[in-house]
Image (cartoon, rainbow, N blue to C red; front, side, top):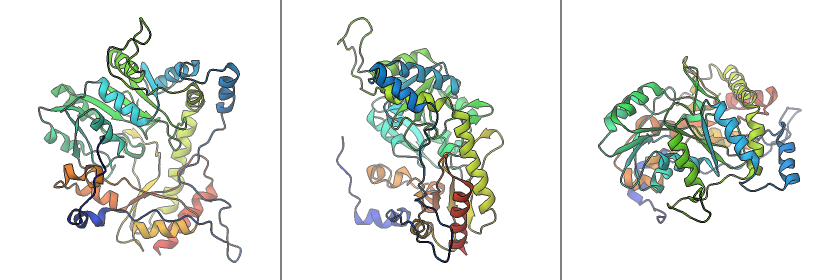
Length: 406
C-alpha cells in the first residue's frame, strides 16, 4: 500500500486543463408552461432485475446456501463461460479482483511490465501494481477510443510479460494483430472485458480472444451481480491457478493447508444466483444497450461539435455506455454541458481521466504525453445508458443536449 500522492503546483499547472470539473449537483426540474420533464432523475444506469433473479435468490434463502459454497456459483460460472465461448469461468468478488487473478494466473510478477492503454479505468493499472509490475502506457485510437494497436510493438521490452487490451465502453479491440504480437514474443494477452459482455470480434465472443479475460458485474454493467467479477479462459492451467488464488490457496487434499500466498476473492451464492439469471438474458440486455445507441444516434445526428461512438464492421459493439465527445463547434464545453444536463435531472459521467494524469500514477508517467487519450478525457462524457430507458427518456436527453449546443 502506498501513501496518497499529492500533485505539486508545477505538476498541476501542466495538466490542470485535463482535469474534469467536480461532479455537478443533480436537480429534478420543475416543469414550466406544461413542458414534459421526467418524473425521476435520469441516472447513468439503472439495474434491470426482472428475470429469474428474485426466485433464484429466494432459493438461496430457502436452502440456506448463502456463502461461496452454494451451487449457484458453479452454475453461473458454467453458463457465463459458455456465453463467452470459453471452457472455464472463475467467479470472484469484483472486476478488479478478476483482472488481478488473471494477471497472476498468467505469471505476471514483481518487476514485470504490462502494456495497457492510458485511457482506461484505474482498476487496470492497479491490478498490475498489486503484483509488483509496472504499467507501460499506450495511446488510443481516435475512432474507437481503444488502445492504438499500431503503437504497442514499439513499447515492448525484455521485461514485458503481458498486454492488456481494454474493450472500452463495449467496443472490441482489434485483437488479431495483438495475438500475433503476443505469440511472437511469448507474452500473455489478457482482455479487460469489464464493459464488453456479449461483444463480438469477427464473430467470436470477447472473453475468449486471448489467454484469459476479466469481466466486471458491478451494478451498472450489462450483466450484474451487484459487485462481482469473472475470469474466463480456455487454458486449464490458467483456470486452475486462478481458482486456487481466488480461494486462499486451499489444498484439495487437506483443509487449512496452503502451499502459496493467495487471496480471498470468492463470490457468494447470492451474487451468483443473480448473475445466472442475468446471463440467461444476455442477448436481450445487449440489444437494449444497442437500441439505446440507435435512438441516441438518430436524435443527435448532425449536431455540430458532437462526435458519436462508432461500430467497426468486423465487431459487435455492445455500447455499454453511450459516450460522445464535445468539440469546439458545440455551444459550450463538456463540463458546462454536464452542469446544464444535471440541472435538468440528467446524470452523466465524464470519460476516464487517463492513467498518466491520475495523482496515483502521475509521478511514474509525468513526462509522458498521450494526445488522443488526453483529448478524450478532456471532451468526453457518457449519457444515461441503462436497459430500462424509454423512447421519451432518450428524446428528452437528446433535446436538452441539442438546446445546450444551440
